[in-house]
Image 1 (cartoon, protein in one colour):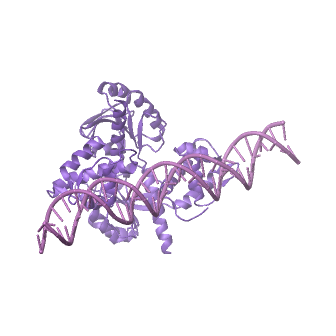
Image 2 (spheres, protein in one colour):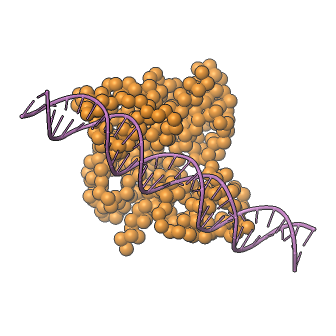
Image 3 (tube, chains in turn blue, yellow, purple, cyan):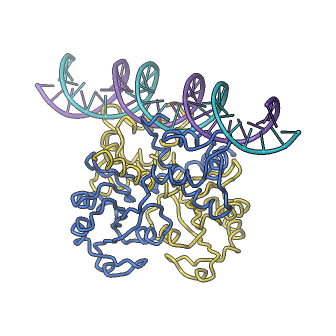
Length: 212
Length: 212
DNA sequence: ATGAGATTGATTTCACATTCACAAATAATT
DNA sequence: AATTATTTGTGAATGTGAAATCAATCTCAT
């Protein structure tokens, strides 16, 4: 255990490990599993699994493996999903609605949805009423919400980000394909779908040219 | 120019650069731009922009910058989006429908949608009829399609992947949260939403604990 | 009780990605 | 024409993440 600088890819894998463990318990009542099993389940090497976990402590037993329940609890604590986080969603377009209906999130619960389109305001999506974006700042403050998902068009994203951080939001999951310019004390994760797609098309072309 | 091994992050940024250039032309009729301007626009350093581009050739003019049109054309050729690619989508759930309606893709066009749910088959989404997954293999062969998006539940993903690669698919954009086990000659890009979210929650917790 | 096999956790090594720093080239200015 | 401002492209240095290796530890079978 070192507890110094945790690599970002490590952090991203933690929730993947956790999700696998949750499923694993449901499927076969496995009490103990090895880094090899966990690694194969999620598509990484056993070395990497052990490396990732060892940043945070010693959770396994040499010669045996990891106790599933104990590892799950520890991962929960490490990631910070011991209790559910409340999140707001800004943008009730197709992507926003998809996120709302995607009920497999671990650690968060979307509790409010906002949009500026009068055609969308008042509609119900997945039991939540789409509210006017004008009410947003007040509600963030009232409910003391720290986390937000931005799923608005690129042109609006920066403005929305400024508004919500002004009202108290500290972490943003940004689906708009623009880099948000924010203070240091706001955490931002960008989820730009174009990156993955571009990579895919590039590689497909490489593959085809290689054959010719 | 080196033309040896291109870093994967570089490839992922290419389409981001391209998208910015497309927008830039629309907004202000800029003919030339510098690596600094491009970098600031997409949120990376000018050094990195130049490094990325230099893997593929010399597109700029020292002391001046890059001609927008020429750079755009070159990026198009490099990524391989000179002509639109036809893609199939498997899974007409919320995420699938969001992708269908998300009409901002560069370089691809979704031309067929498949699902196994009888309630969804026959429905029209964004002008496309959802077809029975049983017809999938035949249609892939008929239309000679090489690219697919998988947006089905985790349990089905591996099977779907085997089916479609058997029918000729060579590249898969996988939104199911499982690692697909495929031959070497199939390109796979995994888009696991849980990773980003986990990272966000972790960092938010770090931030809060830091303050306390 | 002992030895074989399995597995963790840590150290070392290696590979990859980004930043730094600067020569070369261009345009604008005096 | 000479000088100054920019800006590109790239070799070298730095930083970062993953793989390989191995001692220490545990279980189980004999």
